[in-house]
Length: 110
Length: 114
Image 1: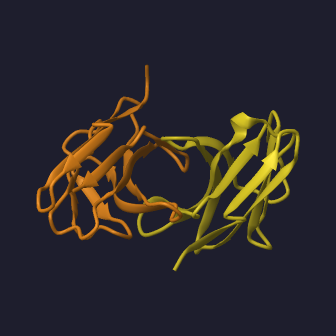
Image 2 (image 1 turned 45 degrees about the vertical axis):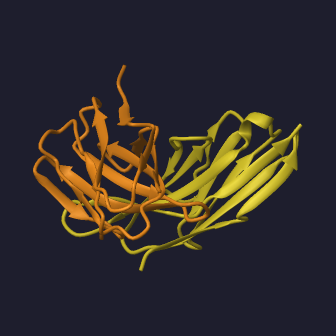
Image 3 (image 1 turned 90 degrees about the horizontal axis):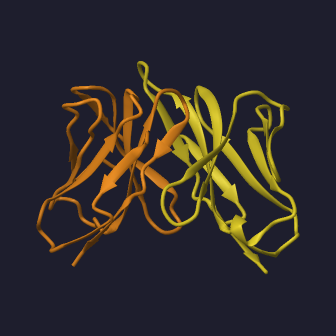
């Protein structure tokens, strides 16, 4: 089946630890995106990548890092520098304007 | 700064009612306006609108765009409990180079009571 997968579904971490969220797609899309969703705030763009080995900061990139070594994969690392990392993280991919989303990872920092 | 504003923020109706959700926007280099439905997890794509005045329809859902007044509406007729969800509006804009990004509104939480 074609689609976008994210893992894990739920993630708990202690404050001060880095954590990496996985995003994989087999839709052959060039562009991939990471969003953060907080209650009542819609989706905010963290990072995006148009092609392999290239990525750009979105609106709220501070405290996050990404890599794009393969077309299918766009992992997001939430670093200890992110002040308020507890949130729902969504990955998306697209070929055109329409973005398709993965099921999300809910990160809770204790 | 690009801005997408949705209203109302939340709405509670009974099954069978008709609802209208609103989305207004201020973006530079407008490309498209998209509607998504988000139940518990991933937003699922509903419509993409690029031209004014042309209604897109899928079953009980329909949407239209007004590029002069910078807004779109999403209509749901004969609502069902399964329509309960957050409805997200997003606007696609052409930023530097070939980047295609979406700016999202905060969503409308629709609750349909039996």
